[in-house]
Length: 201
DNA sequence: TGATGGATTACA
DNA sequence: GTAATCCATCAA
Figure 1 (cartoon, rainbow, N blue to C red):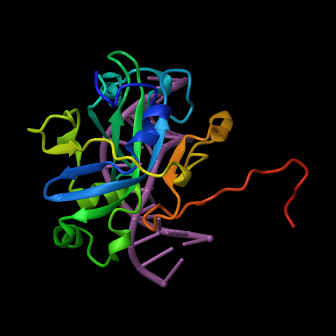
Figure 2 (figure 1 turned 90 degrees about the vertical axis):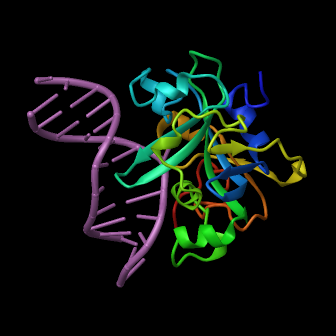
């Protein structure tokens, strides 16, 4: 049992501020998104059940789930559910705190704040790809490691709708980030609650 | 705003 | 087999 075990939307906020290290670069996580399991969450890859691709999401808490999307991008997730239950937290953005020079060479042309600002960028800066699929993030021998939870001022915690999720699941505020962090990805930093009756101009 | 890119999955 | 989708990024 590790601190990564639990419902994805509960573990998500605990991941903020924690450090993720891989291949010579370390980032401090500033933005994450939670995804639940079969039938509970239309936005989750595991929503329709276990498939060859999503098998790792059904593994034990603390494993890394790497997803290849849009034909060119990797996205990193942390599995949080018990064996057999799909639950994971997508790592959306972070701040590079170690290995800055190495990260810059992997992201030519990007400014420092953009090095890991976005899920695919984060993977790129850390050189994460399918080879990290299923590794134990808490094992000190792993090529990808997650540090201990880092306390932060809870007043800086923000929650909002997730990116790329439509339908009923869109209203579930399972995207978490730290207010004031410049490295949070640029999509709707603070979506105002839509009041019924308010229409477009 | 639009082009891109390849794997994955649901169907027939 | 074929078609639709997908947790995005970069260039303009």
